[in-house]
Length: 77
Image (tube, rainbow, N blue to C red):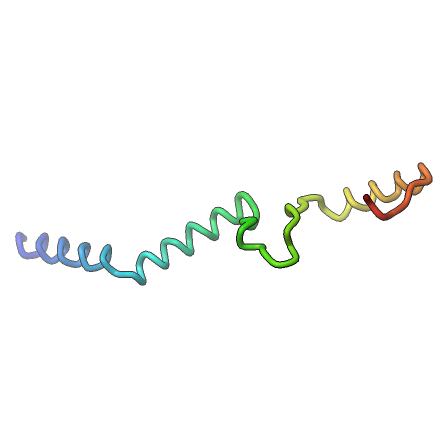
């Protein structure tokens, strides 16, 4: 049984030293973080410099209806 523990320790060491394993763990962590908090602002870049808006369609629709009844413009300043 000693040889089995030695093999396990060697395999664990090889796995933890592997760049592919670290990329896999990093991608999983990134996916979970994005599901919880939305996309990272640094990754959005380009023309997407504003914070992401988490409003759904119904909230946008109701806000536009309220603005129209008030006589406001549909374009936000």
